[in-house]
Length: 256
Image (cartoon, rainbow, N blue to C red; front, top):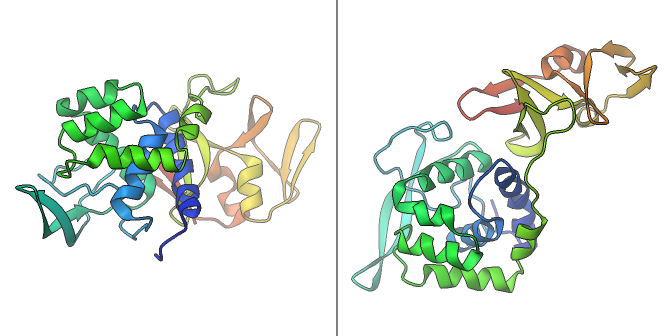
């Protein structure tokens, strides 16, 4: 992928970062945005590893299933920058990468990273925990946060609160072409997506008549969440001629 402008870069990754924060991630959006820019220079490669996470011991997680790429990297050794080659984890989507990074941050060595309440504290704790070998890692992150006013994302991110009717549900991402399209509810193993969102995606017409919902003139079974009608994607997959894939490990719905 070609290099993006800074605003294009942030626009591409911010929705995923905000979603994961809403799901309960301890990492502040400002820190995550700045770190991603620092690690990539504003380029989103096909392997979606925006934080330089190496293969390491190779232990699989729900978000990393063993794919990897080998590429050059700069490391600080004895105070000097040295060019090396290393194996890095490759991810299906940005969501998988950021969730896997959260798995890394669950390690006890990152306990103070999870506990940090401010961007400057969290950036410094990431450095102290040895995430990177660059002695100026935290100051570089903070410089980017300040330059692009990234703490505004922290203030704008509100913790997830289910709509009335889905109080016991969690939110999961819905991906189209490996990109976050919207969110859905996951309750007791069943996914519910806003009927209007999935209809708009495929140019279908939605009508409401006497509290019943019709898609392209066909009555569909829906469930109300707040003021939004939700549908089980599988109930209309044949109607809209779509293919669905459920990532059981990461709990991600893919629509093709």
